[in-house]
Image (tube, rainbow, N blue to C red; front, side, top):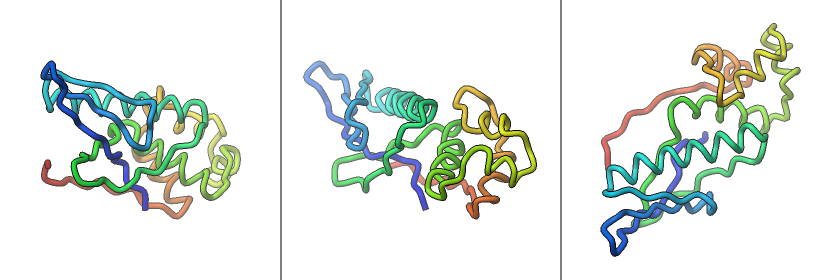
Length: 144
């Protein structure tokens, strides 16, 4: 199972702003005027970094376990299913063409499913994940 939330350190700065740094993605940092805005900016920064990595077919690091004083930042909902598919394909060493054949679609369809800029219907990604023996679920928790 893969968690689509990354731990981050939220630190109050002298000027009152809140700085956010991701432990698993050291080149990603952002801030906000308060904790709420910092979380919104953190979600956006996380989504940007991961979508760039996905577009470039770069490794997606697994999120570490949050430690005391860290908060989990969720991957944006528009991106998480695409990442799940990319990771499942990578782990099983399935190419775009292989998955397309299994699904009975053109390779271009799989390429679009993995494209962060393309709005893919969740059902298509669910079907592709199922073909790889995966099931996509959504979980809602109380906010911390």
